Image (cartoon, rainbow, N blue to C red):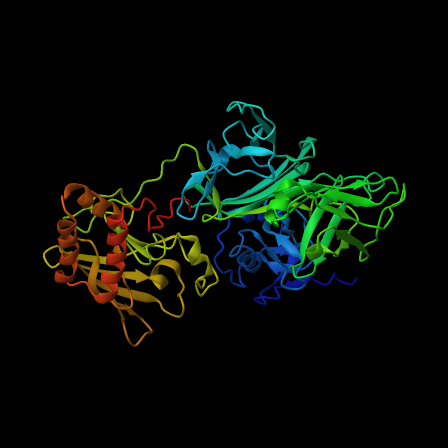
Length: 563
């Protein structure tokens, strides 16, 4: 008898190998609970298969998929798009992360995340999607299934909006990855959501899917996207439906989606009709004429006939248009697709804290506070931005296990910074260790211990040692050093690192309200130089003080409330 040769596989990233036949179903059941730390070749190694049938050890493929848009990435072998929820055990084909698990076991259970738009300085306003929705929310508090809740916008149709006129639909397929706090959800609408064409025209949608990565405390959706899939149409009924590339003289090419012979171009809605000779035409609405500063009616027409039953130009072919305007005498549409696909075509919106966010409806963000007599309770930031390596001195009386002080990397701008040297994202909050505080000299000492805390280095350095001296009023960092383990010269506070109190603006507004003259206000400002502020620090403090003096309502500080 010839013995069956053992089935061997090796990870093409780390080259660890193992006998696939040794991995039983018990291993699969515990896969999502295992640590993502490096697995040695002497241990049972979980191998995961991608939809494109490439096999990796679970540790490597998850490390590849987690850093960018969490749980999404590409296969290193063939660049096919892969989600962490697509991964299956290499031998049993069972999903490593099963779908439709019980919401009540998730850390975001019982929360509702409502939508807010975030202005340049964090002003809130409602965000709309193509005029259909006045608001959307993600609900994890209604039973064991997550829901999408939305309110149909009625204002443009002349109806009075009703705050209680909300509808909800269950996600039909969903996943949650607890390590990265990431949710995937998909659903199809029983009836496509739309409104009639015309001045208030909008696309109709038949599906919705999303990827949502929550903050570590579960209070915000910090990253991800939402995708409203266009309703597919019948080419025989709407021969010009599909995706087109639009080109014209002296203009940048752009892409448009035509649905039921309606489309939106640079925020303006159009509707195509066929004349009695089956030639396409449409009029520019008033908004388009105003945008291009044109008076009178503007008609865009094509001499190409679209006979009944025909499907119009094929993919790669063109449709030529002309208008009664000399500056738009010739416009060319090149066809990219013959019809719309809900999976790939639609409105895709990236969720970014500097654009719009979803926050827990029960959470009330708090601004940094100012304590004039001690370091504890204050926050110090650079570049007017909290979360951009800002220093948070929580206090000496904190719950057991919480850090006395930490550096925050929670702002979205840190996403472009290098990852830790093991490939993982820099933690949102890195605690100081070996803390010393001299209240008489106002000197703080502490260490950031990358190797000790995270078993890795950052940019080749395993520890940073801080020695920071504050001004008498705790308004700014006066001087000090940050000495890095592998750096010859320490970074100097006041020169390389310029930090001020994140509550500076509110303090100055309080002073402005109590003094009677501008001179008294400026006397307070002049004391900063007497207290030893460096020239770069004076520049930063002065810019804030002049804005307060001018009584500008807009804040200079980005408090990172929606990370």
